[in-house]
Structure formats: C-alpha cells, structure tokens
Image (cartoon, rainbow, N blue to C red; front, side, top):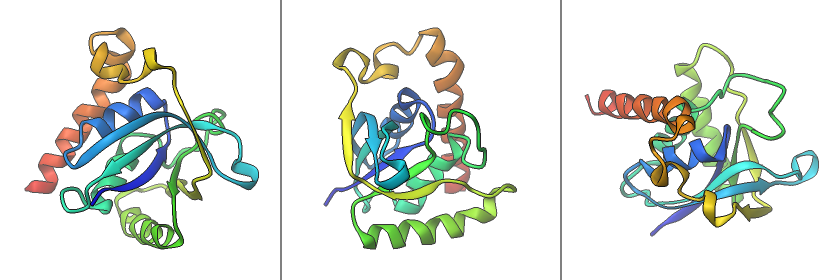
Length: 160
C-alpha cells in the first residue's frame, strides 16, 4: 500500500528528479506546498507516493537530507523551505524519530522541519518531469546530476 508525504528543501526540479530516481517511489508531483501558521506561504516542494515495503521511510528521509542543504539557513528559505510535510500525527512522530536518528550523520544541526500538509499547487505541465525531459540542459548538468550521483553513491554504500 502506497503512502504519501511531501518534501521540500531546494529547487522542486531537483527534488522531483531525486525522488523519481528512488526505487519504491511511485508518483512524484512537483510544485509548491503550503503548511499552516507562519508556514502558510507556498514553498517549492514535491508530493511523493512511496511503497514502504520497497523503500523505508528512514531511507527516503536520508535521501532527502543528502540532496539539499538540510543544515543551512539561507536567504531563500521561504522559497526553498527545508521541510517534510506530513498528513497525520502518526507520520509526524515517525518522521521526528527518523530525523533524530539521522542527525548523527551530520556535523551541523538538521534544520528540516516537520510541518502539516495543508495545500498543494502543481507546477505547469511544461515544467513537470523537468530532468527526465531535458537531462542535457545546463541546469540539469550543473545542479541535478551531482545530486543523483551522490544519491547513487550513498545507495551503494548502504547496501555494503
């Protein structure tokens, strides 16, 4: 049975490509997610459907943290909010435990927030599947390819 979660951190084109490359991830919907309170503004993100029988939530979160600046505050954080958007209190607790466990892999404090999912706005059709439709574009070569290489290297290391 597929589960759903939202992820934001960097450019949604990069985040989309990262999650599309992970075995066990089904649909990746690219656009903007809004939460509540002071996080009610839309921020670049993706909605991900994944099969926890194939990819653990722990590995999914680790992949997300590896492929964006999860320990860095910067001037673009409103547009590129480092967040995991959850759909239930149970998901929140599970994500929190995973972030606590993964903290040991980073020297800086992980700033990724766990936020309730409120709303999603899909990107325009011509910008969906950005990397898959134009892998040779300069943006993809400069920003997305290094993230995918890092992800692949990490997956090999995890398998031993």
